[in-house]
Image (tube, rainbow, N blue to C red; front, side, top):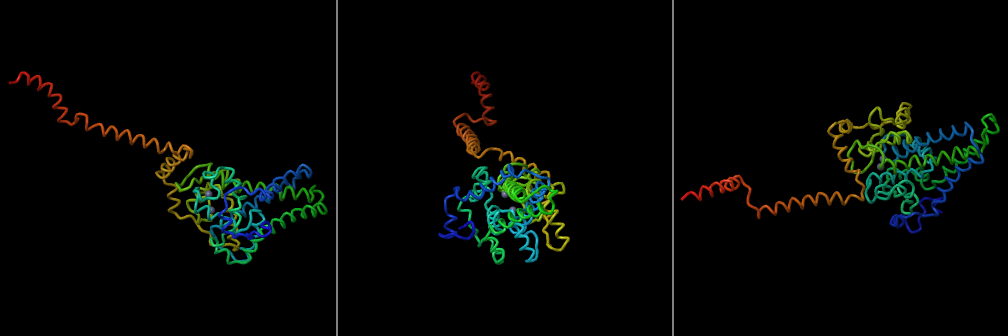
Amino acid sequence: MQWFDADHAPGGADAMRREPDQVDWVRCIPFIILHLGCLGVIWTGASWFAVSAAAALYAVRMAAVTGVYHRYFSHKTYSTSRPMQFFLAVLGATTVQRGPLWWAYHHRHHHQHSDGPEDAHSPHVHGFLWSHIGWITSRRNFPTDYSKVRDLARFPELVFLNRFDAVVPAAFAAATFFAGAFLRAHAPGLHTGPWQMLVWGFFISTTALFHGTSCINSMAHLMGRRRYSTQDDSRNSFILAIITLGEGWHNNHHRYQGATRNGFFWWEIDITYYVLRCLSWTGLIWDLKDVPQSVLDEGAHPDHRESVAAASQVHLLHPEHAPLRRIVPAAAAIAVATVNAAYPAAPKRTGAAVHSDLSGHAVGQQGARAP
Ligand SMILES: [Zn+2]
Ligand SMILES: [Zn+2]
């Protein structure tokens, strides 16, 4: 029932959120189908058109995940009209990453508890596999906490998309199928068809999109450099920025979440930001938020970079080695305390005592001679 109505929670959403954090194997079925669907390529084969369509649909929908679900619904880094907001939400829903409110709620929660025990998808707390895919299959993460996304929950059209979050993905899959059927009938020279377009345009493109996005939850907290010494272990990675059209500058983003761009400097390629900037010239979106100069200065300051590098060295120690970090300074402190404690029993090595010791020999020798 919950696959059709995401708000269906017989025992209450709060009770579900308190359930143990474990894989619900029945809920894995859609993920398994999504991945198995890619194997359909064995029967449908490939054509230049279908492969290009898959790449284009990946790019457009990745921009929707980052530019809409993340930078608009989760962080409100720009403004738009209500009709455009609905259009963007539908575009975001074609990514098959559930509804906009569910996505925004979990993402805001991630920023609140980054890499802490409460973080639903921290690779440092739960391990790589859980942060990449496992957390989505845990029942406690199914419901949307509408109290955390009140600013979005006041739009019934967004709540509808969030509640019936399978409608748009099903329509999108059907659209790829019928587009293939149309092209076979009217453009046979493209050598494609309904099943081939479904496999490439929906299954392969969506599976790649899912893993690309998930890399931000898993890899962006493990791989890359840290410019800012944030409380979490977020990192900046050029490779991830290319795969995710700009989300790879994750350490920047954890330092300052209110900016429309994640690439803070001109050499940090952020394709989503370029798309949003172009959209703003059309007047469809406006009021893009910039990075404060103080945050840019902080990142560019050489002293700051050295301190972050030193902090990163500490992060290299695996959590399993954390007790070592406590034991080594403790052992040193015990050694110093022991030496200090031993000093009172030993002769005081003050200047006068040394002198008296040395002179003692002399004085003794002299004294022996002295009357
Ligand atoms: Zn993060
Ligand atoms: Zn964010």
